[in-house]
Length: 247
Image (cartoon, rainbow, N blue to C red; front, top):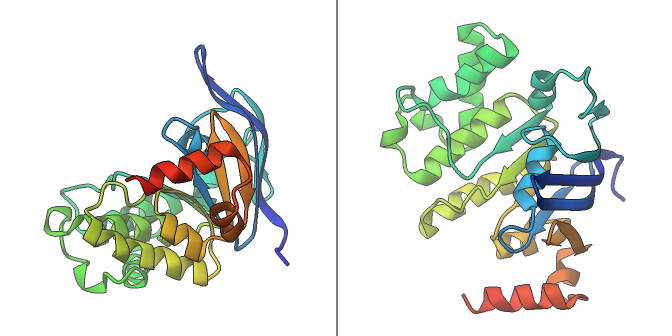
């Protein structure tokens, strides 16, 4: 049985001018749950993630994360984002800083740790993603998969309650994808609550507790991966899965 919800997003709408991107989306995620969001490009998946930590402001709706009313005017956004780690498609590493420096910087600036304490925690985070031996390497000396794992370490070092992943492997060469998915699997096994937008369907089948299919800014269908992939109910999901088989 799943534990209490750590994310509750209700009736989320988001428009960019006349373009409606989210059309009344509900998303409830329990602690320690891994929820995978799939769907065609432009279906609103990434926008939904960005609304959860207010990188985008919803046009309307209600979001609570770990007991915090995300959209309330009084909410400290920086404190909120310490609880919600986010990993993007692009790695966003500082090229002039080592892997250790990139991870430690967030700990110093966001958490306020002293340099020595920040670097100690940063080394621990790098070890957690299998990069203990790359602490002194600069981003240009790392593969794309290693850079993405540094980005994950940077997020994990802040000890968030929830991790959001927005297409974390889409910028990687196929042979580098596995190293990133292994780290995500380890986080999941460690009890991290995760919401993942990705096209890695095999990973979704193997690791997700629940899969949501979005299209046209709405959640069309959701359920355990075996049900969604094995016995889709909607014509739109069936058509989407067929399109993946053709590629």
